[in-house]
Amino acid sequence: QVQLVESGGGSVQAGGSLRLSCAASANTYSVYCMAWFRQTPGKEREAVARVYTRAGSTYYADSVKRRFTISQDNAKNVLSLQMNGLKPDDTAMYYCAATKSGHYPCTREVDFDFWGQGTQVTVSS
Image (tube, rainbow, N blue to C red; front, side, top):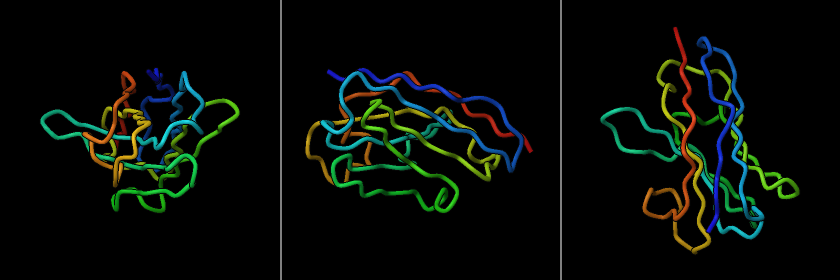
């Protein structure tokens, strides 16, 4: 089992920045991959960014490329998401996810076994 606890959400004006953090109960290096998803009411959960924790390779949704950066701190077991240039369309509940299984491409909701409770991000225009 891996417990995940997100923090750092909040309200910000368009163009602003937020940094989300996800504290993991297991060493992040021991987890196969970790990701940030987001979800708005009535829509499916979508992967925003993903990192293979050992290889370090990343994935970003087209909508957040060059604005969001995913990173991991293996010493502190923390996954982060730096969000710059926020837009109203980024408003959503953001979830941290992890899996120890070798799922590919590790960007689908079904690829992940462990989830945080979510943190709300609201961007006003």
